[in-house]
Length: 187
Ligand code: SF4
Ligand code: SF4
Image (cartoon, rainbow, N blue to C red):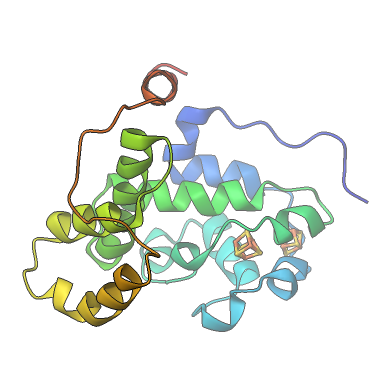
């Protein structure tokens, strides 16, 4: 049974490993999260093992895994955890730490996320072609677009993705983005 109350962790603490430890303090290592995760097959350590590493404060080992970056925020583990722990938020908090600290192994993923949000901020929804252009520019690797050129052309010819040229857009969500940034700075 899922408890009605979940442990509260102040948003600023999401940025620190101690905050993630607080989220997971009641973990009983049952493994339900690992058994519920659709992406576990691709992870190098299971979510249950990752939580053990977090609780032990093994920061170096945590940020050598691919587990949290492969979390697709489906919430299966969060819904099924018998302790009602905020597991999806914990995965997100680890992504935030990796992004803020600019950890090299996660550069491609964190820049992909940033490009996605940049496009949403400009238009209120993602524009796939533009998002990929923003991503390529942020990666500063002139050969990277070549890996996607064939697929990109096929999708464009079928009308599945739009023009790749970034535009400023109408920025309909600007107030929302600004508010979130403000809350993150002054929770
Ligand atoms: S399902 Fe919850 S209690 Fe069980 S191992 Fe995962 S986080 Fe811990
Ligand atoms: S939220 Fe992430 S870790 Fe949890 S089940 Fe979904 S993909 Fe796996």
